[in-house]
Image (spheres, rainbow, N blue to C red):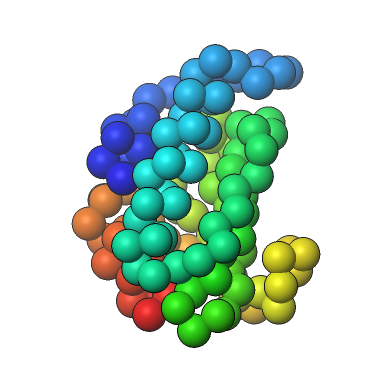
Length: 117
C-alpha cells in the first residue's frame, strides 16, 4: 500500500472525465488493496470499474462476512476510507459507517486488520 499512499499525497486534476492520472491511481489501488486484503485471508474482492474520481467495492473476510468500502472523490476527500459490513455485494447501505485513516499507512493496515479479523 506504500505506493497508493504516496499517490494520495498528490493533487488530482479536476476534470469532467476520467484522467490518465486517476486511471493509473485506480489500477494501483486495486492491485495493492486486493493484495492487502488477501494477506488477511479476504476473498471475493471486487473493485468497481474506474468511475469518476472514486473507488468502491466489496470483499468477504475469513468468516464470510461481506464488507463494503469506498474511497471518495480523490480531488478533495481522500483522507479516509469508508468501510462497513454488508448483507451481500449489492448492499450499499449496510452496517454502521467506520473510517480508516489514509494519512498513515501503518495505522491504516493495522486498523483494517483489527476491523476485519
